[in-house]
Length: 310
Length: 121
Image (cartoon, rainbow over all chains, first blue to last red; front, side, top):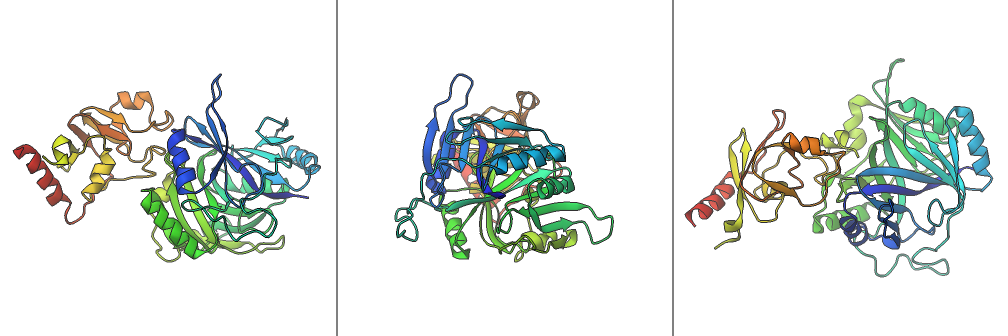
């Protein structure tokens, strides 16, 4: 029982063809379906990464910029009922979504979480296998393109009330908090950021202080530091705008580069980190060490890492 | 005849810096060729952090910009995003007082060289 992972996200892009070049040619994702739009519906592109087995992990729709919604996959169909009750008990309204509301996704639950973002919970989605298959698989697909991102990993959202978001994910969805960023260690310290996990990742969702409904970034998990180096080279070859990195996060111990898609949505390639468990003791960072928390080596971060969101 | 001959002049106030923008090139792209930099965010039209006052001249956007980032009203007030805006005439822009025009040791020299080549024909 429980939430397993960030399964998909829907994002807006201003130009679908520029986005296609970025996600396919630079990041190496595969297009699995395309909606041509019309009749009030935007054009949409459905993509997945090579080591993902479900139908898609990213839906891009043309018009605007930023996050439309995110989908977290739960372990069992019956979890939906359980979470529905717990979410309502917390005080959020839920709505049932039916099979076909999202291409290839079955019945599920839609909720506007306290930070104003739309979250969907689902269990049923078409299985379409990874690019290497399940029988005696090779280590990676022979003809990976660009960065060749294997899997979607996590996202970082902005929230006005971080403690409320934390409480919602802890009480209604059984997430744990791996790390927190606070103003200081006093009793009346303010929480500036929170990183939470649902299974064993370093984090599956995170918040930093900001306007409700905004997106800071979403991340793809790469194999190791060397894969980050390779990704950085590809980003340069394709003239992608890099926001921050390469560096190591003190917070999460992850290796990182942040960059922007052609609509200005911030993405991250991430590797490393550590495993978490239900009894993982929360790590605390104080604001005076925030630069080390973000960039452990350089300890200098451009303003736009804090100010820019979509 | 060099490629620069086909460009237009971008003038940045209050620094009075001048450089050539090639045909079809965004202001940011031109700035970067010379090693100049102004305040920037995503550089992809998504955040609006780089917004400048377009004092004079005409531009078009290389790729669409969301209304939520730069609205028609913003444009009517004479604002533009240098990461997206491609000048079609000579343009003058004004940076905001909190911003700073950063440059490499060669920026002014390279910009002046291209400008003099253009004017001397």
